[in-house]
Image 1 (spheres, rainbow, N blue to C red):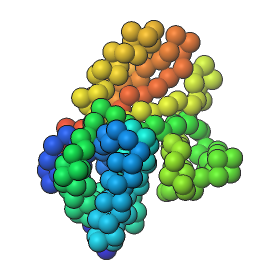
Image 2 (image 1 turned 60 degrees about the horizontal axis):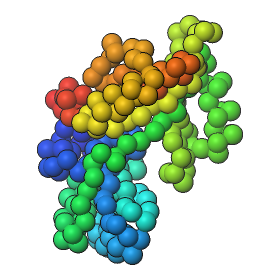
Image 3 (image 1 turned 30 degrees about the vertical axis):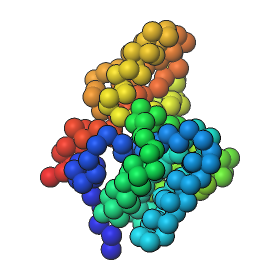
Length: 223
């Protein structure tokens, strides 16, 4: 049985600011500058993954490569992810490829529901997603955003029932919030900060800025 580790333990084992825990595992973005260099980097990662028997998710684009590590049996981080992340970072350095932590983020769709068991199957069918646990849906292709169902204790007829969650590092959260406010948004709820802030656009559509990847947020979990 593979044992999970906390986010704090992951960051203690993987130093630096390259990797951040967002939805779907620890993620890093590497600037390659060209498609050819990106392919070479991906091939190098493939060799590392094959040697460890532990495959990451990789998104190859002309300008860079996004890599996400997560142990699928637990859907959490484990020592396998530590080993692979360290080797990937070392390989990037050897190839002269730098990371850009501020490009790391993940988007999740959150749906408020009084009866999750009744609502979830509709979204599972219409999105062709897979159910994980009792309140999560994930894209089997691991491309689209995940969907999380939040339990309501009473109806909210005058409030949005669907909002977007944006997970990113704490160093980027402040800048993202400031940019949203300058663009006409407002903070609706900061009572859960620094775990997350709820913002709204000028018409009241909501988004949570959630730097849950930061070590301080998970500090209690490390004990």
